[in-house]
Length: 138
Image 1 (cartoon, rainbow, N blue to C red):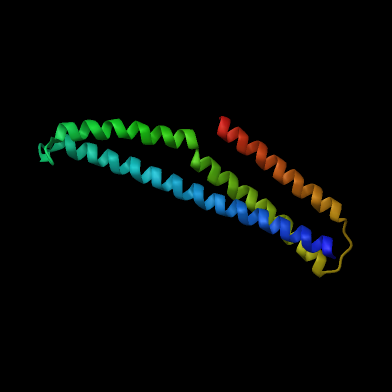
Image 2 (image 1 turned 90 degrees about the vertical axis):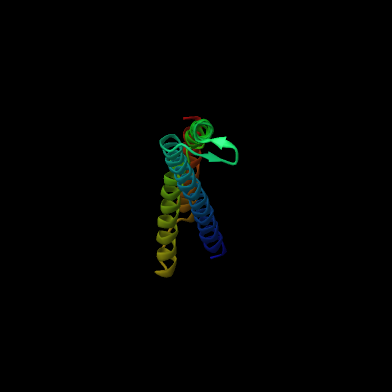
């Protein structure tokens, strides 16, 4: 029984960790997308209207934003927050499915081999790590 609760808590902790990582990557993805969109709008405004702001002409402001836009975009590509967000959600869901299955077996007092669940947990984690490395190298 102690092994069962240890396995349950380990799986749940891993699922929670992946959930937090997913939320972080989701926030980063949406923030970078918003920044990219906002910069694009500012470039359009600065090139359409002729004005001066704090001593800078609209053309200079547009140039500055045009320099910033590729930097934001390349950071999005290098960090791959959208791919990582999706990956973390998938891993979390697999872990939660495993957790639910184990919890149901325990509540039903059904016979099961904890080694099987440990192996499945380790396979999920190993696959997730390989996928994460693939995304980061990609």
